[in-house]
Length: 211
Image (tube, rainbow, N blue to C red; front, side, top):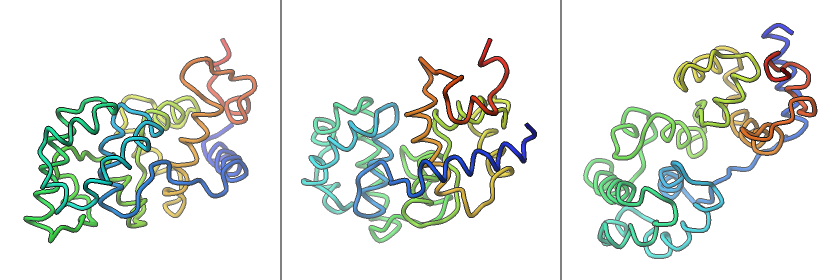
């Protein structure tokens, strides 16, 4: 199956399975989404959704967050892992939002990626999910699946993102990246993957999946 055919098949299959994929991280605005995405690094969405209500009860705005100490933030977010670095980033980015952006999360990549703890992937999630700007955040699920499906060489997430943006229509990006994440978790996991029964891999997967 050639790449254009793969793209059509993948899109059709994902639209049938996940016509309206929800945003996995619970949030109420751009700021709480930004904090939740930052916390999700090397942590499950389920765990983040258990911890953010505790954090946001104390501080759900930059103004409230800076009133907490870094140690107070760290104690709350410990279950999410990497709490020393994450707590410092959350506190400092909240200060920067107040100092430079009137307490408002910026709606552009440049300003977002200048915030502590915010890389391109986190910025992409905020841009597409908070501001509805076309973006294609590539997490480990998407990186793995796009390689499995023979749509990218799998060298790094940057290349995978470029290939995804080149292959799939821009209007589909925000929905598609969520669809692939949900599909990867249910049908196409890293371990115990049954390529023969996977709705997509069984039709278009790389030959080595079946060796």
